[in-house]
Image (cartoon, rainbow, N blue to C red; front, side):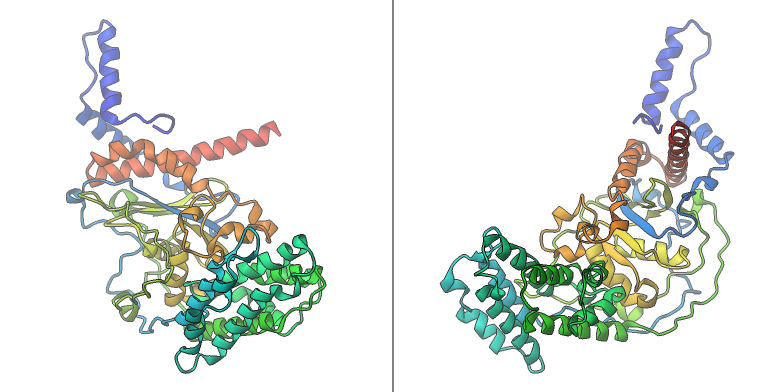
Length: 489
């Protein structure tokens, strides 16, 4: 089953043909009997011990999450299904509210910056149309008409647009130098004008180094390298200007100070200080019944967030470039929502659970929050652009040191997300991230697709048995491959 995509019925039919080719008085069992025997036999095997990675340990620091439409008919779903997303009467009730408008700039300021960047050629790093770029009347009006209380950021944007038009002093230094100076600045302005949370552009682990940039205390390339791990756009801007011999413009410093204050203020509102989580130890259930199996025991229940989970979603402005990638392939028609699996960077499955109705951010959030003592340093996920604010709004203190990033394979589908969400933006600056094979989850999914047809025709009990057995055997093959490589070395 691990090596070939052969459904149960097809395999039984092939065995019937083989028995017919051999002169024997006995025929092979029918498919229904074989499937029942296979499921009963799988229960005799102690497969649960094969979850987890021997190298990463019980709480891996780098996790790759991905969902797959490995589903069965919804009418076969039983109430015994118990994914980590499920809440009970024992779940803690958290009464805090989500913080609205977490972007760096106000909507009109973002729009004015984007209009200017649209008129700026990234290929020639020059103004496409001088008349269009020269603070078009509409862009100027946007900056003039900002709501009360946003005048400071409007002035920062105005100064940045002036510097962009004048080339920040690099226009007279030659084309090559001009490109090395302007490319990171354009990238920086794209991040600042994005619809994402300010904590994506300025994550909490990088606040100290961003504050140093804002106070002109980045004095060496070592300081810039430390800044680049979580604030790559600012670090690249510093390098480009410094190598060209251009002092850091006041408008860039003002932007850094504003972003830092915005991110620090947002983090302070989200934080509960020294949060203590209630002690909890749930008896390990049978994964064939609950549809959930992780290498670590469940140490927390997913809390309830009545003021966030049931709050109406904010409507973005018509021209806001919010992410257009959706979970539209999951839970369609009469099928369940599929399966979410967590993988380590070595190719081991760390855990999985069946999704009742449709994959969402809650699946990754709840799975890690329920089973990890400390949040991973890096979570790579196809929808990390929305997972980050979802997680930080609910459990900021748990996830505050986590980098949420979209893997290299899927980032091209997020045409309206800034590169602050992309893993390769950070891989270019952090050598530790270069060793991550971000597509490892897709390798596991390509294997799981082999049993998709078999699962689609199963009831819940048989479907969970097939899924769990396949994943556990996959981990055994992965371990065997590593051992053979070690022996050959």
